[in-house]
Amino acid sequence: MNKLRVGFIGTGRISDLHAIEYLQNEKTQLVAVSDVNLENAGQRAAKWGVPENHVFADYRDLLSLKELDLVEILLPHHLHYQATLDAAAAGKHISLQKPMALNVSQANEMIAAAKKAGVIFKVFENFIFYPPIIKAKQLVDAGEIGTPLSIRIKSNAAKSPNAWKVQYDSQVWRFDPDTCGGGPLVFDDGHHKFSIGWFFMGMAEEVHAWIHETPINDGVNIGLLDSPSIVSWKFPGNRVGSLEVVYSSDMVMNTNHYAQDDRIEITGTKGVIWVTRGHGNMLNIPPVVMYKDMQTTTFSDMEVGWEHSFINSTRHFIDAYFKGEEPLLTGEQGRDILRFTLAAQESSRSGKSVKL
Image 1 (tube, rainbow, N blue to C red):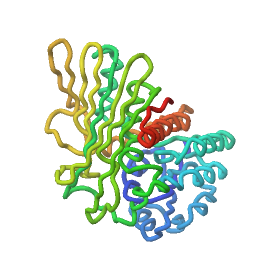
Image 2 (image 1 turned 90 degrees about the horizontal axis):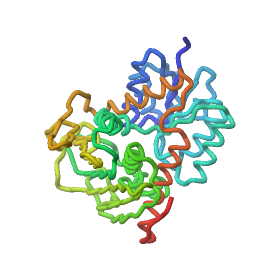
Image 3 (image 1 turned 90 degrees about the vertical axis):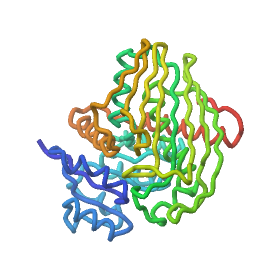
Image 4 (image 1 turned 60 degrees about the vertical axis):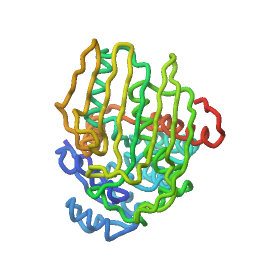
């Protein structure tokens, strides 16, 4: 069996988590990297065993390699559109960091370009592959809490002495709507949360949002955070969901990644399931808790490190590639989640609900 040969376009901090499974999976080989910061690209290449002559400042040079099958695109959001079109034109399969684009028109063109080129197009989403979320989904699908009626997601951003140290100039683009597409919490990270809502209960049909702003200047992040915010939505069949985002500036969090943590509550006709953690570890309790039939059951038989969501998502894609199956998220599914995030932005601006 020929190995799937992978190149990374973008070698920022998050690339370390994307690389884990490609480096350990016997079916894949990481063969090239590119980044406008050539020093950073070279450091990642040395760490990952990529030859020096396959380290590029311009991703188009990487795309010209014949010995390359797939690209992992890890660029700021405003660069996704052109990089995807270029990768498709070069005949490379594509795994693209979320959100896929700044607008639906771009997303449509990207999907069409991949189809025309005959390449696989995956929008990378890791939260739905986080082991506690997978466990909760298995319980829901098994009918343990009956028919799901609502999903409630609470996301806390804070500070942490253990969190990733990311340079200001590496993430200043997240605070500019022209390069990010919206705010860092509701639009960027919100893609993960809206994906979770979609994963458990399908696509929403109507969205209403109130997105506020809080100034932040912690020496690394400087700008306006889109917090506190509340996004609520309605699913078909008289079911609802919500996302609440809060930045707690003086709260110290235990985390090895971003200074943020999440809790999820899924309520059904027979019971309730809670996922009690995400990036961090605010609650020192089992990661999945279920209440039904007057009893509480806890589940701890799973990995809880956030890196496992990346490992599982990448492994799923590798397996789908070799089996000839569609990955999760497809370009079309990624476009649906993008519509969700854009609807929240539009609702907050207009003060009205937005139908999808």
